[in-house]
Image 1 (tube, helix red, strand yellow):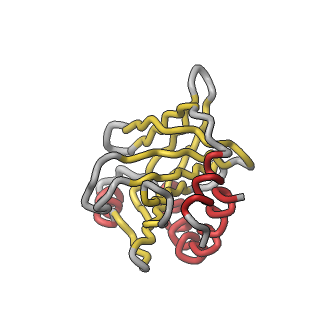
Image 2 (tube, helix red, strand yellow; image 1 turned 60 degrees about the vertical axis):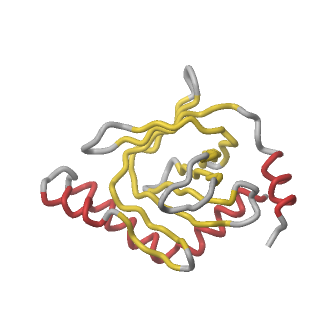
Image 3 (tube, one colour; image 1 turned 180 degrees about the vertical axis):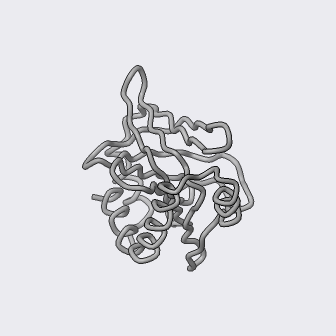
Amino acid sequence: MRNANSVINIMKKFQNNQKIIEIKHYLDNPSKSYECEFIQLRNNVILTKYISEEVNNLFSQNLVSYGFFWLKRNFISYSFYEINHSFHLASRYDICTETDFQQTPSLVVSFLDLYLDYWIKDGRCYWEDDKEYCNAKLNKIINQKQINIVEKTKKYLETNVSMLEKEKKKILFD
């Protein structure tokens, strides 16, 4: 494992302080947006950085998250680190569609959330928002094409999460 200074120095080489707006669209709720720092666009992956200054029920400390937005996959991911980058706290994969990147007039990355999130935290993997997903199917909020995407992506993430975590570290540290 790299030491904290090494990680910080590696990440500084990408930072250009350019802002990007992340927009998370929902099928049945208003969109949410977040102002993040744009790190890079390379090989159809947008990398962003967001510093959280609030403590919540998932993390008992401030943290920095890196967003990985693949333009040609049906998921995005976040890696959560201690604020000083010394320790990886968790990862989350959001199943989604319609990931899009626009550069006019400002940088924007957006996606349509399809409910399920796959977490890697405290040494275990688990799905979040199963109940919301089931309710969306029952109430026909999510269509059959989207359900097929969710089911296929769910299997893919469960099978390939270790490889994906290595890919994300390569994006961050190479």
